Image 1 (cartoon, each protein chain N blue to C red):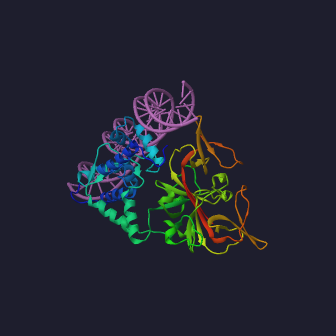
Image 2: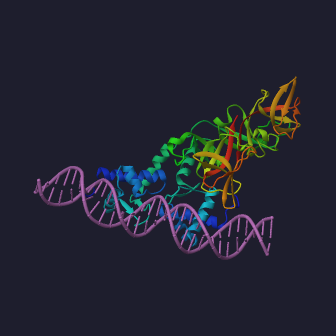
Length: 216
Length: 216
DNA sequence: ATCTGTTTCGAACATCTGTTCGCTTATTTA
DNA sequence: TAAATAAGCGAACAGATGTTCGAAACAGAT
């Protein structure tokens, strides 16, 4: 054995151990090492490990699975540094969206004092524009698969198209309904056969529902 | 099961996992955990681990020695979270979640070739643990307000509690149903009166649904 | 070519590790 | 009290993992 000099294969094994350790967050097994460096037998991997142990590059606990550890701990910190360098991945666009609680008539809904909390959500989910979140109360929209406790994202706008699901202000309360205009009147349609359509001529559309989500 | 509340034993197990991880620099085995917390049977340790998995505090790779990992305290994820916190105004913890398409029997669902897309979502929405996304097909869960085209976040686990909404593999297809065990049999209950309960003894639970969302 | 040391391989084996099952014991609930 | 649930136990099992051994391939030196 050539003392103090790592062969290509030995360096390959050390690198594989470091990489596997870093990607799986635990030491690799002999079989994982064998596969990583292209050895077709576990015994071959063990042979290499034994060599590296004898040279002082590795330590191993006998008969313990994943008992291999690199003798040089600085390797690990180096690996962590590399991982951090790669990890600057914030994919897609994000938006910080206010979660609004009760809505008082006339008060701008995004006024600071009405905001319970902020959530950061992907734009792909809530869309563009002025968006806020509401927590749904009641079951009037259950046939539209919107139920008590769900959160809805609402994009602020004053008008809506027929069939849109909208958040509207009615008698000082926020409500979620399907928007419908007909015969010169505006209707707010619950999606639950137990409720009657509401004449919404004096309601104020707050915005259109762009997303629904619930945590279980 | 008492949701969201850790029993003394459960906290003890979590602490033991953290301590053993720190002292040995690798995840512990079930037997090591059992000894650390004073349980005299491996099965008891597994029982506790399963509970914590169901609650989302742990993740585990099937049939892999030392495959247990804490869901939140991983050094790497923490480092990544810190890095993101510096470079952005994003508040709260975030997770990059894979959107999985069709599921072939036997193939690990998070295998690279099955992943259509990655979405970054707040942990407050999808929870802890090993989570993936599925797009819902069919209307069998419409009474649970889950309908065609919705996305569901599924936390991987092999078992479930009665009443949990789960994703299960049945005849090579992924399906979403309510999980129910009774009289020694496992049932998968659709939430739509037009469908009949399915005897799910040979079904494989992929995980529990932790969140639902849809874009309109 | 022959020898020698190195490296790889496959197979069998021993041990470790995760999983499953039936059973018991408390505790809680109806 | 009876039934259901939570928690634990031991044993058997299956799969993963480390170990050992003999044989073969390979390269360099003689």
